Image (cartoon, rainbow, N blue to C red; front, top):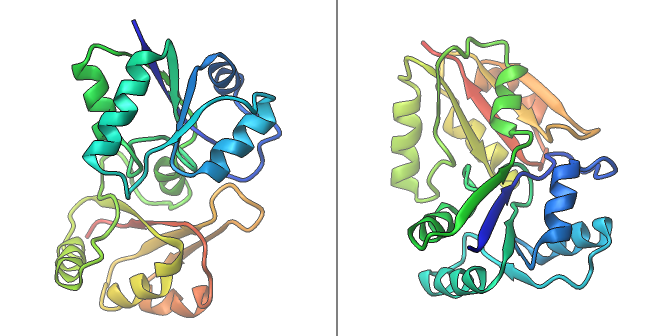
Length: 220
């Protein structure tokens, strides 16, 4: 029976101490499935397995791409799915591929690891006995406005992620929020910054920053 290992990657840029389970999974696999070739090639170089086949599944992939990758998985003994950082399928590609694998009887295994979502919550200082994760805000203007309008009325701690280039826009979208937010930039790296406050009051502190970030919104 073919196996698919869904493996978490480090959320920082220091790969000197990769999880031994991740290293073993990559060494044993017949196919590495990644978002970007740069990440896949670096990982293979670090573990000393440069010749492993690589296939890419990311936000641009089509159903045809997933079907093609599924056939590769079915033809392999062990395949490994990684994201660029953190855990695959959590606001990252590709739960659809995993779903196809399950439907075809592929055995699913995991290598757990750090999560930017949980990490951002841990440094927010907000109550996280219950929380909701909202993924990424829509890009289309009307849907984006609706997202932030509903978020402003949240009665439970909420977490969302956003693309590195969208920090200024996100703060603008939240300029009328009255509740506290915690914005975590470049989690786990030397450049990590965690800033908390009312959105319009902390915008200046984050001006010009372009890095991956997570936002935790305190409940009303």
